[in-house]
Amino acid sequence: MPLSASPVIRRVRLGAELRRLRHRESLTLEQVCGRLGWASTSKLSRIELGQSRPDLADVLDLFDVYAVPPGQREALIVIARDAATGRGWSKALGEMGERQRAYAELEAGVARLVEYQPAVVPGLLQTPAYARLRVSAGALLDDEVDVEADLRARLARQEVLRRADPPEYTALLDERVCDRGGTPVEVWREQLRHLVTLADRPNVTIRLVARDAAPHGDVQPLTGFSHYAFPDPADPRTVLVETLTTDLRLVTETDVARYERLVEWLLAVALPAEETAALLARQAELPVVPRPRAAPDGPLPDVR
Image (tube, rainbow, N blue to C red; front, side, top):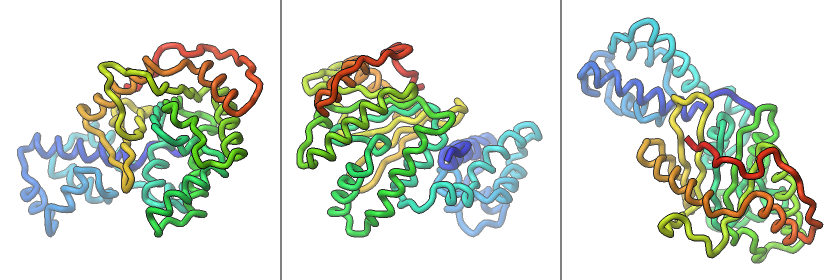
């Protein structure tokens, strides 16, 4: 990393474009596959849903069926090539499990990222010692987790915040994240110090949401989630919702817009960045030193 456009997002975008072109021609999945001699409709369906890495030759054949004009064809070929990318990304992302790779592919191409976490420090902000505890805890629920490989992958993902052109990153953390729980004291203090240091980066904003905070209408997030916006505004804004067993990727305008409203409501009640840094410093028993920021809290991040 850094890498260019996210392949997973480009697959979603390409699939939507191909589906729109098919509908424009009033063709069914069966009719298109029949013309191309494809054995079943599942191949085309998976391409349209962005669920598989497309073969560029297959995409060019679809362009022929849909009579895509030269100008539009050239623009879509760029997207198709990004969507078909695999080898370079695998080498850059290294050894990662499916869940880590899903986050890494989105993070590497993101321009703005907002994360909400109700109980733990987000992976991008974790120290190695804290990350090891979190990965080991997850392994108790899944004995197929390779703790060392997962730890290496999590730490490798953090490079996105240190790259030459880092994304604008905002972490919204429930105040419960400040509860040490069973974490060893020195590991916890190191983690809090690390958060204070990261909060001083110009591209990183960390804000706590107090326990008694009441977002608009007392709407409460039910799980942790991440919102991704990309440099190309035509690439679909995406939300990844974290669950115990898997992560749900949302790309439809309706679904994403609901989470964007929730982000705005959380930002409206979250502690300012400077107050958050001071609270974290006190928790870590650090001296509180005011750090001027160009725009301490400024306008709310544009999640659109």
